[in-house]
Length: 93
Image (cartoon, rainbow, N blue to C red; front, side, top):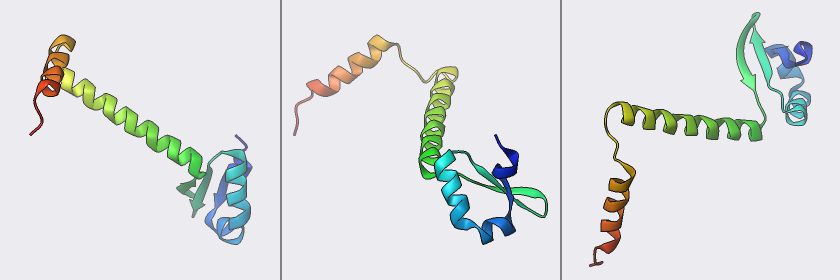
């Protein structure tokens, strides 16, 4: 990480928005935006953002599954598939 390029004050972002967007898209590294010397935001390219959203969604599903197991809201595999098969055997109205 090149701190000098990846941490920018908001005034620089305002004056050089096109350059910063180009940098973020080319390097795939986030740019940290500061205001009054404090980090306030992070700019990322859309591809990296989409990947992060997908990863977070997957982690949420894993956490929910873990909670279900801890809370006893799970079935043995054989029971699950037996219940699933019953649904397929039902005649359609």
